[in-house]
Length: 378
Image 1 (spheres, rainbow, N blue to C red):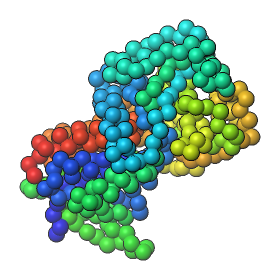
Image 2: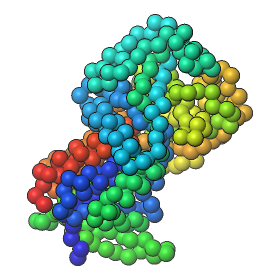
Image 3: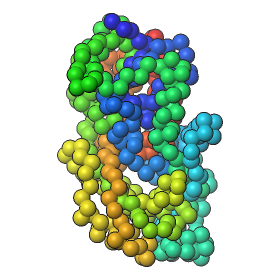
Image 4: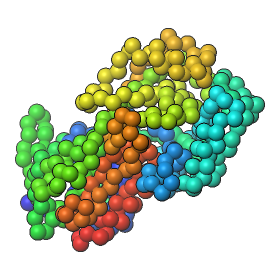
């Protein structure tokens, strides 16, 4: 039986960032990443806006606030160091009201979270920067950006493997047996239409399985099911726009209270191609198909701030599903990171609800979990 100090289940952006940080900070540890898909980042991590968030929206002191702000700084440094394509494009959170207390409140919340560069813009300043935008006021976030998320994840994996981390794709974890020295991890390896059983031993097992985190937690023998938070699948669709991109910045409507997301916003890729989304729809299963009939609803929402939009130029792009811990009508939930001892199994760490701003926070999540791993005897 192969033995490792640390086994990470899930090669999304959180798992890859964790593997990188563990390899940097614990260079003598043997580490393996198991991924059930054929490649890394096939679900939530590759089906998002690719935005580097500033850290504005989250409750003061929450993991989302703390790790987003720290992660943003680490992410920009990482992109510079390893030549990951990015643009510090800036974001405008807009309102159709000249004196909207919501913008003031959002600015104050961001300041409490350590985002101290936010600026309130009046309509005149807004029109100078974005003449095609219809809005009366805005909150400008200069530290918001965009990046190539696939390049980022590929770089994390390359660095981890160079440091000695083992990466095993097409490997599904079926059962985790706690033993005196850690865990026996039973897996199935899929190759050429066939599957083989494989068991490894790990002193520390880390559940970074994203959308599958809850179902994987249920496969850990001896874990109290009551300790596993409920998961709510929240789908978000994106539409491409075939016309010229009229915006220099990312454009976000001021979020309405109680919404599961941040509203249908305008974003763009590094080539400047425009897309809109996501909407929010709680669903019962993972299904990435997009209903083209949503085009009319998207157009109506977008035309509130981009009145010259041509609806016929909207076309379905892709969909993502967020592993939320809050259901419809419930307050947004924080990241849930169970450290050693939370389940009564000292070597077990589990990450639940790693949705937005998970990409931005990924390196900080890696540092946070690495600190927890250091408490485990390896």
